[in-house]
Amino acid sequence: MTASRLCGVGDLAVGEARRFDAGGVQICLVRCSDGFRAVADTCSHEDFSLSEGAVDPDACEIECWKHGSAFSLLDGEPLTLPATRPVAVYEVLVDGTDVSVVLP
Image (tube, rainbow, N blue to C red; front, side):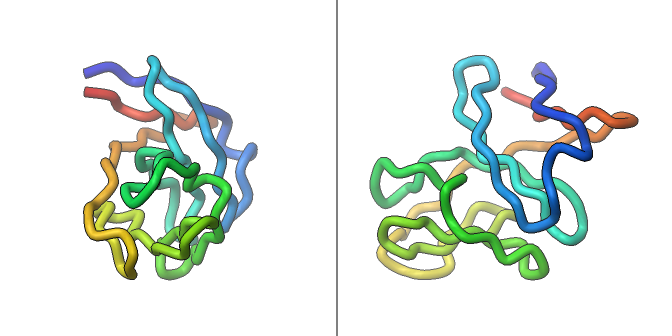
């Protein structure tokens, strides 16, 4: 497992999502009310970027902008249809002012 730096702590506001490419893996990094969360950036329903969707920072959820499937950023589980499969979740490390993701 390796950690890849994505950004600085101050680069994302609470409720903001951004796409990063870390070691060939497309990551959707989100700043929730309680910290940073990372999931695979591609919706499990169809091939659309989750980082372009709406974020609920208090519930720690993101909604795919294309078809409206919502996902938990805690465990990747789909919360609404049409998605029925979870998205991958990645461990996030915050070290000082750096935000990194741990890749398998």
